[in-house]
Amino acid sequence: MTEALFSIIDVETTGGGMNGNRITEICIVRLQGDTILDKYTTLVNPDKHIPAQITALTGIDNDLVSDAPRFHEVAEKIDELTRDTIFVAHNVSFDYNVIRNEFKNIGINFTRKKLCTVRLSRKLIPGLNSYSLGRLCNSINIPLNDRHRAEGDTDATVILFQRLLDLDTNFEIMSSFLHVKSKESTLPPHLSSEEIFALPESAGVYLFKDKDQKVIYVGKAKDIKKRVLSHIYSKSTKEYKLCQETYHIDFEETGNELTALLLEADYIQKYYPKHNRAQKRPAYAYQIISYVNRKGIIQLGIGKSKTVTDSLFTFYSLPDATEKLTLLCEKYKLCPRFCGLQSAVEKCSHYRIKNCEGICEDKETVEDYNLKVQSAITSLEEEKPTYLIKERGREWDETAFVFVEEGTYSGFGFIDNETAISSTEDCNNYLTKRVATYHTHKIIRSYLKKQGERNVVYF
Image (cartoon, rainbow, N blue to C red):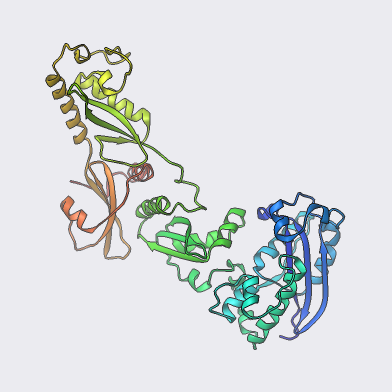
């Protein structure tokens, strides 16, 4: 392939999202085999402010580019140098997409075949600790001067690419990357294609991890592989940034969407991933609680908590909890003052509850009042069902189950189809305990509303 033409390119930019990322400097080397045919370097006025952190990295500031040509003034030269060439860059998707968007802004469609020296290096020089341009050059003794300037980075990439050409003697690897059906050039630079295409086409949870194995995103899917690829091939800035930071992808199959949703909620709370937005904001539980005051009266009230703790009954909105407590007061003739529905009063005067029998005025004995409270508590306990939801397992001969004990989500587990569950003890033998939260409650409630009780077994 000595006759093949390559354009080795690096751009410096203003930073920001893909659609707003403007070029501040570009260098192009037109290469054929070992021969450099042409080289072009220029600053570019981006027509927007260059942030201070970008200037600190590249040394390019607003004054430096103030008299530089704008992109439309250099577009013809860039098109000429890259025409009929294979576009080559270190993390090619970045440079290619920035240049393509600049052409798009002036109404020109820019399309080139492309090769990524990060992905090629991972294939042809395996086993290195890092494939960032600086560390890679250091590992294989390539001089890299003027780092984070277009010409310095392009010069180093030219030497790197020539080394890769020498290693790929028959051009087999590069040809496979250029094949029309190959996804190599569009995959994130730090992810191996083997890892991506080994993902299962089944329901479960996937975890994007950074270079330090820290979880940076958790997602759920009916088809894990399809969903992960949708992240990778998305054109949005948010997805692009996520994939650029991803070095590894782990997954956990669950067999069905319900357990995938519950596991996703659990992992988001556990890892608090930087790229997840939903489910990270604290959602409070409102719980009907009981305690004995100094007079020996059993009082009821509403407690607010970030987690579901032991309580008489749990709600996920304050109005729901208040309405339930009000109904208890009415039904069992309880005092709104001693149920937390009135405060700073000597005797109750609730606008709705009129049947208090006088505990707040010492007209009723503590013993008689407490018996009514105990009856109210018993009624709440009877309203907290224990049940499991059966769903499809990870294999054809397996069943997944979600266990709710006394109204509170306990976790989920898997059993083979020959195993019978007839008691809560049986459930606990196969159960992986999980934390009940506002989000798990919402997931189960939504499932039951949509699916009904056809998969529910009550105890």
